[in-house]
Structure formats: C-alpha cells, structure tokens
Image (cartoon, rainbow, N blue to C red; front, side, top):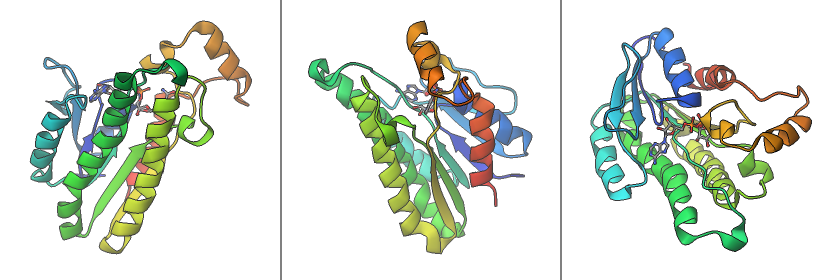
Length: 215
Ligand code: NAD
C-alpha cells in the first residue's frame, strides 16, 4: 500500500474508520470523507466534508476528486432509514438510494479516468448481506445494496483490461453505530442465526478490503 493514494468515503467511524486506519498503517496516503463540517480524522489522515444527501454538491465534489489522482477508492459511506414498505415515505426511499448507490456511482465515475490512464486502480465497494438475502424493514437499503453489487460487477467488466479491479464486499452484521441503533431484542435474534453467535468487528472487514485493494 506504500504511497497509494486512497479515498475512503464515510471514514469517520465504524467500518470506514477501521479501513482508513488499516490502510494508513500499511503506508497508504489516506483521505476520508464525513458529513460534519467540523469533522476530524486521526493524525496523518486527511478529512474532507461531503454529505451525499446533497446530490448536486456531491457531483461537484466528485469532479474535484477526479483531479486528485486516487489509486484506491473505497465506497463505504452508507445509511439506513428502516421501515416497512407499506409505510415507507418517498424521502426514506430516495435518501438511502442517493447516499448508498448514487454516491457510489458519482465517486466511481470520478476516479475511473485517471485510473485508466495510469493503468492501475483498485475500487472496493461496501454492500451488505441485506442486498443478497433481503431484510424485513430494509427494502430501501437492500435495494441500494443489491444495486451496488450489480453496479460493481459491471464496472469490473468495463475496467479489467485497463489494470483496474472493482470488487464488492457484502458484510454480515458488524458492531458499529449502525447496528448499535437496532433494538436489543433484534440484535439477539440476529445473533441466533449467525453460526459464531456474534457480530463481526470492523477490522474483519478492513482486512478483507485491504486484500482486495492490494497490488
Ligand atoms: P456507521 O453509521 O458507523 O458509519 C457510516 C459512515 O457513513 C460514517 O462515516 C458517516 O460519516 C458516513 N455517512 C453517513 N451518512 C452520510 C451521507 N449522507 N453522506 C456521506 N457520508 C455519510 O456505519 P458502518 O456500520 O460503519 O457502515 C459502513 C458501511 O458498511 C455502510 O455502507 C453500511 O451500509 C455497510 N454495512 C454495515 C454493516 C453493519 O452491520 N454495520 C453490515 C453490512 C454493511
């Protein structure tokens, strides 16, 4: 990873922060994004404020990213707005699709040209087990994550001949703020169907992502 310019979206906490720290420890030059204007990052890591829920601003920001010549892009930023489809508001649907799927599209498009010119690039997108299995109360989130899986497979086919790989990781449940927000009884039920009877840790995902982003 030495000297590899790496962008991790949503790198302020949870899985994204674990990825950012791990890549930094491996010698990468790491930039993270987060939604807070006053956000901070660990020493040595650069912070950029960008909120994907403002899509026009995200698109403008992405064009700046295009100029920065990243070697590695990790599309990790993601949100949930859970609810049964019967009662799901347009805004709950759209905000999840915008942040998780359209944000991934904008950033991937932004880095593609310079990666193709360099004939080197690594793109790793963070989807979810919900995008494969579906999850009650997460129709919007599952659709966005299933979309990321199809998107990444297509990008992989477009870029493979130019030395650029695209992969997607679909984690099971991982201990972060996202899963801490689930009610305790739901977390207990979920653990019953996980063979090791516990959630994953962010570092488990960071190790997998590092392998997929390595030369
Ligand atoms: P988290 O809530 O702890 O962190 C989410 C990150 O996304 C934060 O850094 C935040 O700044 C960023 N973010 C949130 N809203 C944003 C917005 N509107 N614009 C830009 N960035 C925004 O979540 P996490 O559990 O670390 O999840 C990271 C990724 O992993 C997400 O894509 C999530 O869907 C996926 N995932 C998580 C789990 C899990 O169990 N935790 C399982 C499978 C997949």
